[in-house]
Length: 166
Image 1: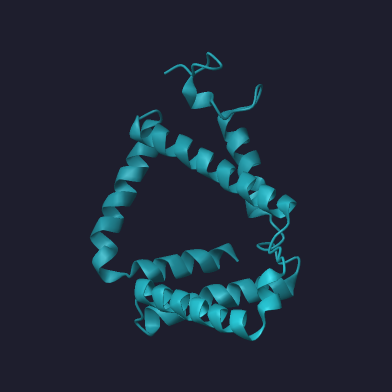
Image 2 (image 1 turned 60 degrees about the vertical axis):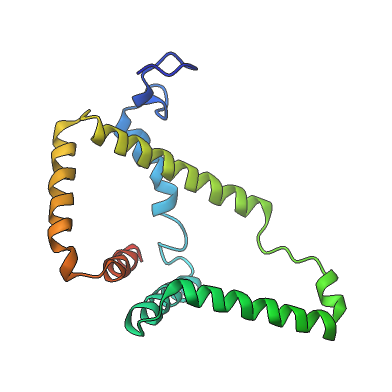
């Protein structure tokens, strides 16, 4: 359909003027795929991130812990420790802590919004049969995943996918 704001097809809503759809999507995902973390420009940070990522999956997959009860217990523990700190050292609660700068938050949100927009356009195009070849690939892929799902854990697949990013 037509975009009510720009009078163009909604398929090209996120496309820059004068560029092909593939060039727009490649340019939008470039900052994410070439980030300092994934390109190992700072090996200590990337190694720590990859180690934390793998530790998460080791704990929750191989130790067979359930994620929801663990997060609830962790939240209660943090609240209890916070209460103890409040009474032992009240000045700690009054200090301002900035976890991330506004620029970092803005860049992260912008990257996430770009990826969500790209995914939305791709999914819409697959569902609406805009490109028959892509839709057929999606149908075949979904059928293969459906048939293979009893043999592989989704956590294992996510672990492999995450490690392939690094």
